[in-house]
Amino acid sequence: MVHGAVLLRSKILTAEQLEALTTDHRNAGLTPADVAMLDVVEKIVLDAYQVTSEDIEGLRDHGFSDEEIVDIVLAASARSFMSKTLDALGAEPDEEYEADPTLTKVTAFDR
Image (cartoon, helix red, strand yellow):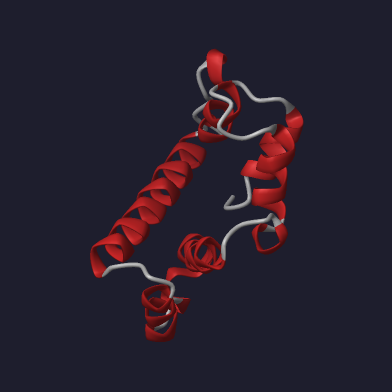
């Protein structure tokens, strides 16, 4: 949620773009490479063991280097780990990052 709030505040994304990205990234106007990356990220967050060698090869086919693939996997894993840890502990975001209910709904997909 905090990341979504930062993206909105810094005007990197509009609320509509963030919602499109988080509700259906395959139809959010992204490049095929970005869609492939987010497909793998989604697998990592939901069931990491389902990531296959074909998924990794697909990222290479879209032009990602092995180093970039490792960065993608590490970033998705770390984000998921921290979110799940904070959720399990009942931690609340700092008030400055409190999100409106719509943002919370569209960015809490891995919980």
